[in-house]
Image (cartoon, rainbow over all chains, first blue to last red; front, side, top):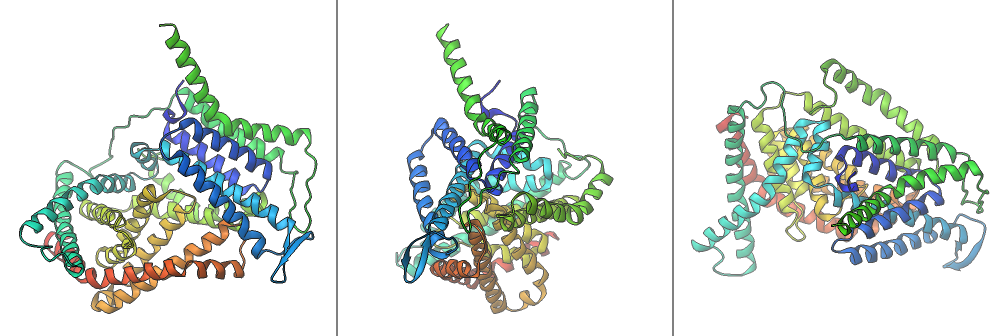
Length: 290
Length: 227
């Protein structure tokens, strides 16, 4: 068994698509709350820099989006108070909070996803769809640091021959444009050389083989199967359980079948946390025996 | 590694995606989430159109040189995004579309949106940005003949495209906030005015300064190496 980040990228991508898909499209506060819990726990567990900033940003975003809805939507029967003769209703406030929670949850999942998927994994997933687009993507990713490096070189060479000597704004702009222009010519010429070199080595002749550091293990299949079944079961079992926000709030009582559906989604959402926790405990245990 | 290995099967998929998958996913979306059907339908159609384009691109015989040039332009787009205020993605996408072709333009726009979102935050809006910039590239490729002739035409076109892009992204903002209404959309456009103005102006400046030299460079490369 491995930590969640080390699962096969295709399995991880599918997992994220299903989890965020349910959060985004199934309009049910219980799903949203469960998903929020899972996303935040997973983010906390992974740790890393910028955690605090991320949480503060989410909090601010939550309040802003939650505020917008009651200000523009005047549906609902329970009027709380009036602003400029426009009624602010309880229903709109609650719906706004619910929607804001959904947005924040999805953003947490996305940031967790980008944290896990490095460029190798992305290229692997893209390559499964389209080898050509994956190639363009991988070349562009390599060119970005290369061009920054070259830009520095061009800049210092141009400074040496007397560019930027005035130090005023038009001079700086002119210099920047000139450096960018030189860099572009250089990059395009070099690109042609790269392309010729690729052709000379047989690119485009027959099927392309490639190195992938990822394999499908049993637990990857397990993750895919769990994700698909849990999503299907949870959506199916809770289909008859509808929350109504407008015109008046209606929260129907939860039946046992519904509860099973929510439990299935809960298991799915907490899977990464449980998996990583288990690995952590096992690691501590093994180390304690040394 | 292609998941689907047999060629005829891939052909079938190419026909299947637009005619069956898109209506099918729209119907499913309407059943599963009636409250958020707008969001669902827009995201599903966007993703499937991107998939359709990618599968079409993959089947085509594209020259290696053209592909590498696309990668170079993509990298230039992403690097340009780090310059404060200046966001040249639209400008470079338009230039690529006009001088290299609509398909490369689409690719450059879509891939740069994807890559640059790794620096500025990935989210459910990524497919929309990819499709938005991709379509800008495709359109400029279609209109390349008149645009090439007149420098001011390309500047105007690029500026209008940049504004259009902002308006399309405002639609997404509203959908994302739950439900679509004209009132909300107007509010979104009004709040985004400073952003839109800065964006359009920087686009215009970029195109005025760089459309001609960039075009000359690309034309030269095309002439010299025969892309």
